Image (cartoon, rainbow, N blue to C red):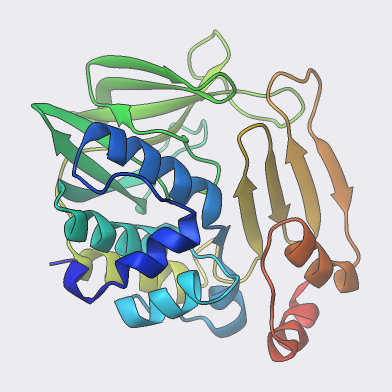
Length: 284
């Protein structure tokens, strides 16, 4: 289904710097998840520049493996699912509603993988950009932390009358984030276990890349997560988040002509001269 047989698995794993075991085990999943999250950037530049993001595996391999570029969750998940399929994992893909502290019902706009191992299910979210560095077990209530980044996964009502899961993250001073719990946590996104297929991702991906109603079709947004910090670029606003450091995050407004160099130096994303020429007029 996810065209794992067409994936250049060796090239993908080499891009991640992954040299570990290839058996479909929890240890492999954890290592692969972490390597992908730390190696493949989140960026929406193709949508901003061309209003189009191909999801065929050949295009994704050329972009995410053969070039210093990244992609959105739909690109990440399509590539990652091909790798999981090739390695022999049992899994399915789901979509979630990104809330970021809001309570209104939003459209499903984020893709994730749920992996089934030894009678348990694991949420493997490698495509959010600032996402968990390890899979999170689906239970009624799971607290997940790797010493730096912390999350809570809770089973609860996610839309009126519908039970599902909510992933919480800590709120941060100076960001305007909404505390949903009263103890410093907010809902990042909600989801149900309704399986999604490549055709479903193509529909959501098309909306996200081309619709004027999509927040990611016209405005540059880039993320790079490290084990101890997160870099974000929102149009020309560069933000660095360091967990455990009190106070608001570090921010700096860039000049348009600074952005290509910051993309390369901070995010590891190198644009062609043609893409730079297309990008600069959009950085208003």
